Image (cartoon, rainbow, N blue to C red; front, side, top):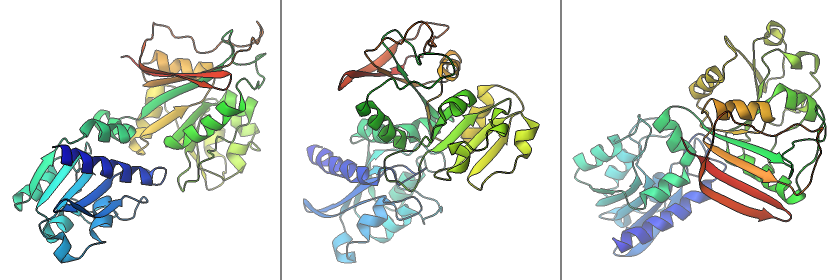
Length: 352
């Protein structure tokens, strides 16, 4: 068991090498071992390219693979997608044993890869460092277990709980260290969401400083179509990342947009409808950076999973807008408090 955990830990470290490039696929790592010797390692390098198992196996000869053990952080797939089934390759390679950390929560895969391997006489063990594997792909696991995206609400506030000095103005609240952290933090999510007011007042780009082929999709909630007369905004013109707009405005729905901008007509003004569309589009995680109104709605409607609050030791005064005010008590678990120069980052999972 100790050896299994050792090799699985190596596979988990391999998986992390694919961070920011696997897009909708999970990060997966693999290690091939024979006679207590590591023969090869691999990971899912890029969305649409070889899976971790295939990456590791491709580095070895049939003689090396025969009767070897494969450690993999997620159940091997058993279906044709952008890549052929990894289960077939494992069987063809005549491996003796496969050790799996996490059973894949994706219904297309769950248990099927394991069943096929066992049907061909391969010994399969599961659950080795399972918790660590689930945490590695927390958003992926949550999406397929709950059929909706993981929602993180982030806000920056002053010591007197204000988000600006005055309504309808943009105020720099936090320090450069927080600014850099947020730009990096964005890359862990598949989408960033704001309301139309934030788009109009701040004119943000919502980009990440991390190099990735899959920058987060910028989502704007604009029920009334306020962006129609503000088509010069960065989100609509920079073409640096996809921009999705949710609206009920007939004018905005008919508006001609650059190829990176998509307009989603809304039948209602409910967040549940937006969430349903994001689920259909396969968006597994959303980083909510909108103002207090948007943040409050996610929390009040019990759609938020995680809260990140950046706190600056400044007083912005009574003319500023207050931050998120929930309609009900909210407690956090697994709270993390971190000092970033003279600012604090307070984050935790919302108890439901």
